[in-house]
Length: 314
Image (tube, rainbow, N blue to C red; front, side):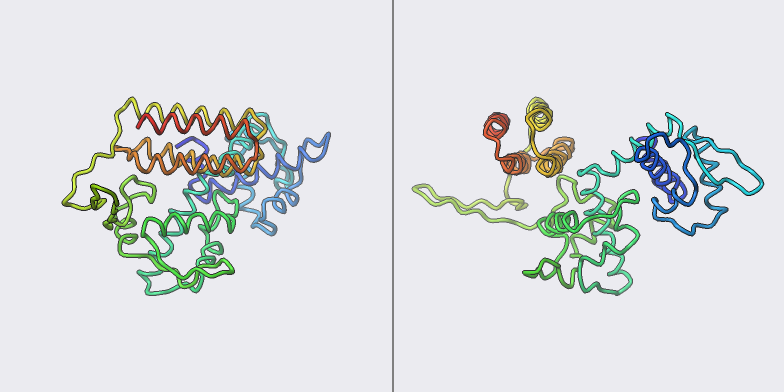
């Protein structure tokens, strides 16, 4: 956890960071502006009418951190000046809370914990979207989106951690946590743990002259899906190479964001105690499909070549 993440982990630490970003944005929007009034900062940060004592404590905390400077008169602290250290901190915090992978992970983890809390209180939600109205429906003060929530639901449902009724209009109705989901939350494990699935047995039937049946995850079957250190390092190198493709070939920002989420999932699996080759191949295929949406031949060809090379080495 970075210093910024540690500060932002509490409400008393998060609020000054939000004020700092608001201050930096307002100064950047107005050439020549070096000092911003309190009301403008509070309005931009979504805290109009904040109690003055809370504001003053946060301003002093920002001053102690070297982020801002101010003159405190008899009337109080009415305006702030941004330091270079404050500008750098604001940029780092803004980048952190806009990280696609961190936002996706937060959405999945927090929404599952929300459903678990509802179950313990013997309450229910009519729609999964209700999560967005909770305090956890934002990541470091930045509201989550419907797209991020939809992606989180699909991930949780694929792992057998939640259940509900999907509709043509989009909202998931009557969402609830499954026993597997409750066990995962109570064990303090991440929904992105390599073995955090429901534990169900999947039967695969192969037809042909020598047809066979295989029970994936069956306690009676021995299957080797783990990778060597060399293979894992190759996957990590492929992720780095794909990021280079995304950064240097004019890929649209929306495609970059979607691909980055999947690359983060690949890194998560590669960092697991026993990386699963099947999961890595599935995610590599998914990132190839995401990058293909750019519609750029050279990008698609280069990415597919990197992905195929990595998969052949597993």
